Figure 1 (cartoon, rainbow, N blue to C red):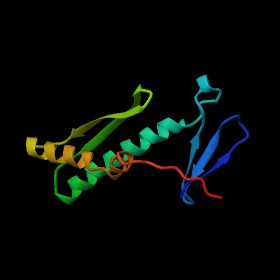
Figure 2: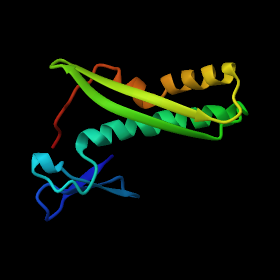
Figure 3: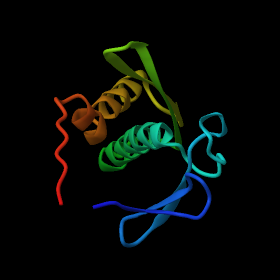
Figure 4: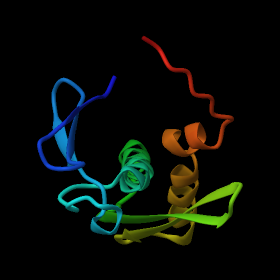
Length: 126
């Protein structure tokens, strides 16, 4: 579970999982100080981190000589009712075409991508 706590700056917030803490804030154009990830950037980061780790885990499990992975994610809203996560995965290492294909498939199988592609419900609890 993630817990957040407001700080004294206008919209600055910390989020923690009981072991680690990150800073979040509203962007300057929304009245914040811009001293941390925005809420939407945290969504982008969650997907980017998951894709990056999924690719690296797959490579390690299958002895694929992956040297590094860079993942970029951008959240887009092409229509009022649509949200699109655009992502790019850059893979480096002495990889064959077959290995590149396997790693791209591993990226598509990322658990956060799977979660975000499901019907999502929200329930407030006490």
